[in-house]
Image (cartoon, rainbow, N blue to C red; front, side, top):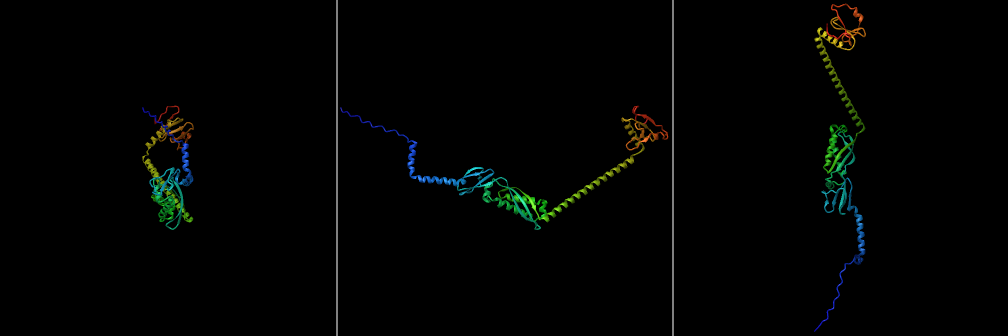
Length: 344
């Protein structure tokens, strides 16, 4: 019986173990050691370029500003406006920052009038770029739009509009001459992607003698208007007085035509009734004389007519010595007896 010896058992293969981080770092270090100078120089150059190009890469847009980008390969980006905050762009491109708030520019210019006189106008221009058209403004005009558009256009329109006017018309703004010219200047500037809020004339300077003559003329015109107004007032007052006098005259005519003895008697009776109803102590004599009542004031002992305001008091002695009439008067003490009015 053939027997064979069992085959020798081969040893098992060791398991695979992942290298540790330290091992990896050592391997990487061994590979990079020959290239270490090149790597160091590259890192230094990268850091240097980053420090140099930092302002061109990281652009900060402040409040009240907006940016327009010019690309080296695509040109001005008129459809995109960079708003406030941090913006990152390629160092090959350029960004221009515009202030979009309202701004004020002062300017002085000389204008020749129709007579050849030189007038100096001091202006204050309030302007701002149109936000939505900022790219067009950057492409067509540029950041110097104040000196390229706003000021030259204002000077051009003012010189054309005021060149055919007299110095007096300009100085006094006759018929709104200055106002119309400034409106035209604003409209012309608005066509160049800039909005002008207002153009204010701060001062108009004329030769001293001309300015004095114009001011004196204006003063005399105002005085003349004042005299005309006073004359018109006096004429209206005279007309009022004429109308009032005519009314008084017509009233007197009507009264003269309507007065008769019966009306006077009736007025006397009415006055007697009014006085008899008062609280004062008096004696009323009815039917004395021509029928007009005579009133004796008990406190003074004098006689008074019904209209005591216009008639002078008559002493009592003169009444007692007066001749007797055919009709005997009736005396009634209104302080003690019941009040009666009218003839008895």
